[in-house]
Image 1 (tube, rainbow, N blue to C red):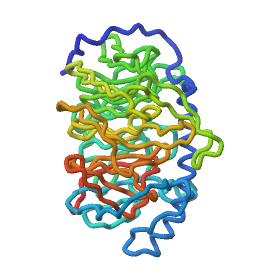
Image 2: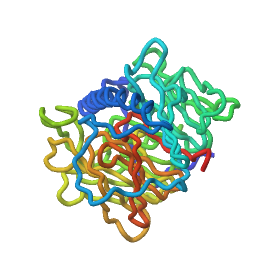
Image 3: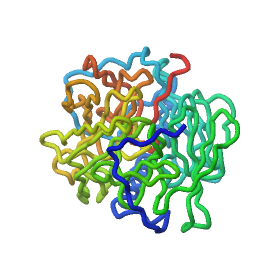
Image 4: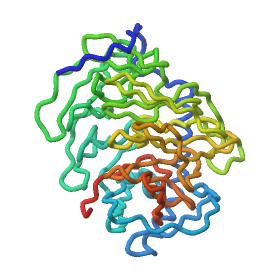
Length: 421
């Protein structure tokens, strides 16, 4: 049954235009920057892949590639990540060249419960500027492969083909995803329908409102979150799209769940200096305020950029795991001055509770486009630590732990429950 949207959302006036229009200037710059970052990662990980063979049982030694390192003073190395974390981390892509006649590169599978790092050809993620390339939906991984595919999160069993289109988004209903298909070339209407990951007939197809663009973000408890000319909007079939407060742009998204949407406002475009250590002339946004909207209650929480920083740096919808799975916390990077250095520092905030303070994550300085993920039990934040290695931060205790796993300049990084946990 469709849930009616809350009254806090004003109606949007849509107008016809190309449905898959050329990306906005900032979005084009961001894709270019991400592509440069991925190319650098692939070159660096080629050496890591060789290190895997030299450092049994499969955990590589530290990377020396200058693009993945940040100088951080530290009194003593932290203890290893505890195996009780019960989490497996999937990171893609691995290896170089990125794509060849045999398909795309494999995935790092880091079982933090056993300390074993391996490579896997599943999920077989395809190339392309798709957003998302992979999403976690319950105990399934949904990804762009031969169309849209799904595989169990323990990577067992054969992948299932959900549809011929490469455009998808998680649905609010458990175990379902939205699929999107453009009709009559790039200018036609967008057809959308849901499918169940466990099988069964597809849902009734609907046509997105005129002016809507792909990629859509995801299904929420009060409608489908998508792009329209006026910004991000929630939409239900038969009604007009309703614009989110402050009319946020799609490129300034941080993360979204079925209940919460996190996005930046007051954002300005920045460019790194030509002599920046990583991604010269990379384009990115810095936002004055990070906002988290509860789509059910209409409550809007705002987090100003931490003092001394140049603003929050959006990680992108369906690209970064910013909101914890229990919807209690959010992690986000803020740009370190000067903005042209291309360096960021990670902060974590509580969405619920009395405190709204942005807490800096220890030893979290990194370069642009570093990924984050929350452990399967919500208690640890996984991020890039010194030397380009995986670190973990327990918010409740303030403890940090470390691993020699190369991290976190990947295109895809997601955490799932560990089979051995």
